[in-house]
Length: 304
Image (cartoon, rainbow, N blue to C red):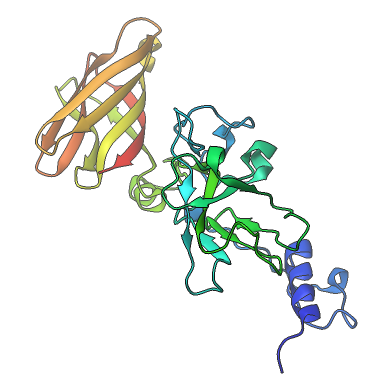
């Protein structure tokens, strides 16, 4: 016999509403009386590392963290969805893009849905707008923001979804780093950080006891990353001299190019940076002006 809808709802009520496991029927053991904890799983690799940088107001332009799809001059075109042929005809549509930003970040992030012929250049102008609440004919839709999938959840389909038109989605997607951001000093060593963060943000710390030229501060594999941004802090505590700077580095598989900018010093600079590419290894190098200089860095990577 199939599981009843009441049992399914009871499971969800206990799991989502109370964070507990369902061990009996609601009539025997209500949610407040369930005692075995069962919180929702939060996958570390799916965490939006910089979600706090998603603006509450829908941005006019695509940013480092938000890509907009709205047919504007500064955004991508509305996404033409693809029908899911494993479902009832015209019932479900896939954008094939994940991590759409939901309305919890602001009401303006609610996706806009249009029906128009395939290949329409601006469905917002020439298409038919379909509202989530439907037209009053049991033709509502639901959008799964994580999966990027729209389903007409009502018993009917809108009249404009008739086999001639396709579905277009306008909205915003989170395109920033995902994954657990760990730093050296948080109980992880450099190798653990590299593995756990998938190269998003890596920390290093070095004590340079000599003034030898071109000492290696950090190294990464050129086949994994094309570009790296460094935020660096240099200290010479003996005479209270401090130096902070940023560097941007990229390579073309044979040569490495970098620039230094945004330098701040309390006295004078404490050394000179350079970079090298030897074999598969791209290295940030530093020549200190003083012995016993310490240097800490944070590297943000972009994959090759």
